[in-house]
Length: 161
Length: 169
Image (cartoon, rainbow over all chains, first blue to last red; front, side, top):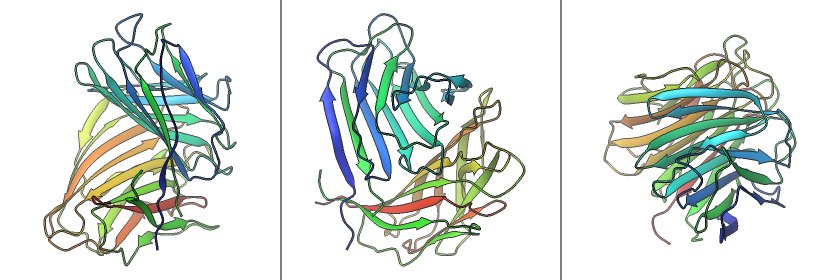
């Protein structure tokens, strides 16, 4: 008999503006991780890159590719990986999906979707060149801008059995 | 969370790889299916190589549109049964593609629509990201799914899991 496999690990609502936040002590008992951000409009500028790091690793071990509207670009050997471009013009959604995040035989990659109906629809692929299991995720704003109060952050775990 | 998202089966590829990944005898008790694939192919050339679908062993009546980014440009193409691409031997060892597929209404007699997204990252100039929308114009309920690499085999450590989602608690 199949068992329920899509579980909420943690959820929080930001009560103030921040430039980063961390989800830590992620259990290794799932197969996939899905981070969902239901974001309030940013402050400090029109738009910013939203980036992820894992396991407090700040080395140049990250890369990404972006498909944004009818445009594509990429970053290599970066200190974080992009997964969205939130705006100041309305709420936005970001999803970040790590498959096999605890598999120590493979590098960790993620696929992300992000969007804001007034500005952009995006897909991202990100990579962390490490075989370590992911135990924390830090989300970092770019361009010295801010995630704001009312942003809801939820991390789900999906089990394959 | 309601008990509506359930693992049906998982395939983990062992040493030597496999030519296809098959899910058979899919229960007809869910509303939608989600297939999650972490994979690469044993093909020794190229950075990326396509992954193809078939349902119920049929390779007919599939339609597809895919939009993709290469890191320098964005474009679209049509290729029946395409579910995106996975990393190949021309990409850095240890990097596995993420492919995420959702099939709605798989038990109905309507045409079957599915969406897929796939990523082939490589920390190099050549990398890809794909989003596609497809339809299988067939009235049969989906009872089996086969994934086939365009070339080579699914490599060791590739994993695929099929989930069922119910729209009732």
